[in-house]
Image (tube, rainbow, N blue to C red):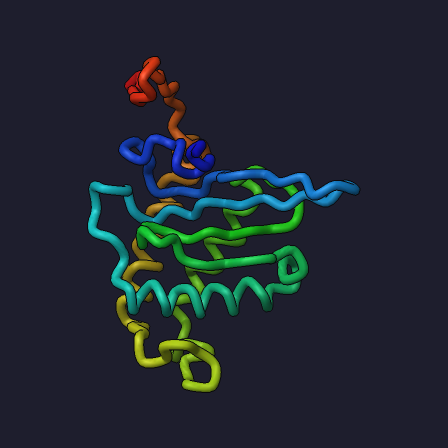
Length: 175
């Protein structure tokens, strides 16, 4: 089987940032874009605490789906299985720089959260697994990073590597 696109990016070179993961043309001028919102360097930093990740998912999903300028564009917000970031799927195809302000505002909104929205048995599949304090810590860390690196193109573009494949199927990177 072929590796899917997101597994074909050299994860040893990814830095925190906002990346276009894939663009899907659904026909009739309908396009959706999946963004990789990476908070941690894969395989080099500790991953995000599961309970904090869950809280970030709830708070930011609520923010995105209530933002008057963006709510109709949001298709999905959810955590990566590796716990290093989130996926955001939006209608249309924008450059990562064009959603920088939205994501900065979303992560800043975590600081003001007094509770985790939907953290009740009737709303959530594991309502006891939340950590608002740690969610605030991770959100602030990401906000500070985004603000310090706003002009750094490395936070908007996946690192480019060419994968060399031998006749017997082994993969090698050029970096």
